[in-house]
Length: 216
Image (spheres, one colour):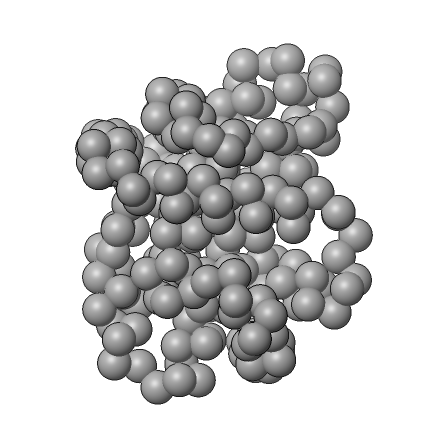
């Protein structure tokens, strides 16, 4: 779950680097927004979820924007990021989930064997995703199983709260796990772009400005 945008960022101007990091954070929140929606209602916004799941298969994208199929596809995530920075985020679970995923990603990249296993699992589903779409139930089940067999064994575990009625259904659990895999993909990208938790403190104003510009 790596990509060539890491090299791209090394030569980008500072403002471009911040904008790219904002995109990765937006990708993270967009995926987790769908995790929360699925866990609470049993259903995702298919178009929004597709952007997140498609990003899982764009391992060698030329730029951060291309990971998500263009900046416009990240508008829901950018909106969530702006709400977070302006203390208007209604879902208090999202920041907690985001922090857990960022911590999980650190454990993940420190385990080369697991990283290779995840990459192989994604590659194995590439053809099905291209033919049937990344939100096809069989593709999401495969991605969910991949998450369950790999990342779910790392600590800290990402604990998703929601409606027990839906979280007791295997198809819903698979969809949640697939969206979590997409969230980890964005966390990997954010780190590759030089992102760190210090950004949220020391570069907050720059990130807010970048988000506003991207939304415009």
